[in-house]
Length: 133
Image (cartoon, rainbow, N blue to C red; front, side, top):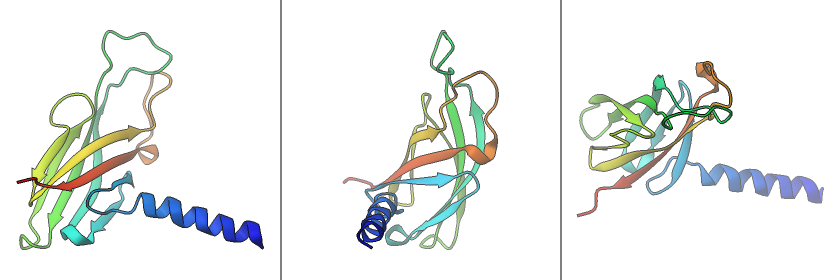
């Protein structure tokens, strides 16, 4: 019984660390959409536009880049939808939109061998912060 209580607490702690909220890093699986309630934004991980990151077992001239497409809808802007591409190495790594800065923190999994990663395995980590000023 004690181990079940600990498992429940750990599960809740892990879930709260990735909740989509302003000021928190949170994850989206490929195709997943979430709402960030306090920002009144809806975010949808639409596509992996490019993934040229250098696999861990390969010697490359440069580190490469992953680019993802994310759809952003604001409830405050009459439901206007914008699709932006964010990058891991190149610019832009973040976008300023609807009063917030949305930053691409990481794209997983990192390639370990040459060849493509199936789309359904991709997961991105994002961070949403209010515009300072």
